[in-house]
Image (cartoon, rainbow, N blue to C red; front, side):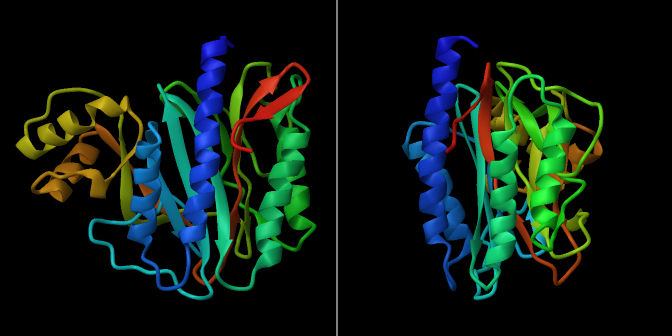
Length: 291
């Protein structure tokens, strides 16, 4: 990895660590989700970085992909388990990090995802199969009486690319990719009191552009114009200041121009925790950019 690229990853990681901690401190009962989202995203921009994806604020059984809607009136309540997942980039080099804020009484659930993440990080080095990392994650979570979310994974990162190979599983596996020096990966275990599988919910607030081709609807053209500087990275519905945005987004999804990311949830009444760091694989281990 070139030194200037390494430096960008490290700068993005340091900013992400600082902003995640500040955002987590804002999460308290009766505070609005929108207030926290605006704080986090404004902080990223104020620090001179780019928003790699809309801040994810996912409650209770929701594991990922929730973010406030325009004018969202939801507030945090006592008992909530809140996943805060943020992405910071510098010239497209991304730091992806997440934590869980416990507004209830689930300390062991939160510990499960943290210990699983940290144990997997300890095993990162060139030549290690990603299935080995999944086995470590699953062991730490199950040993505390919970289930890993089997159909969510960590992932590789690249310039302006939030998800690329290798996927880093949360369950054991054989074969598959082997870690190599210079890879950038995010390890993000999810622990759940539910079934261990998430499904698409009806709520959709996050999108990303798949292709660039002409569209006829004026509002759709305006959206594509507004997001062209994102280089394909995700955006939120609340970021779109276009009349008839919902109709235009639906048309763009139906036409295969953009992708929708439904909120991913376990069964109703369950709780999910998450912990995540980004790291660069080195010759003898890794450097965690967001630690």
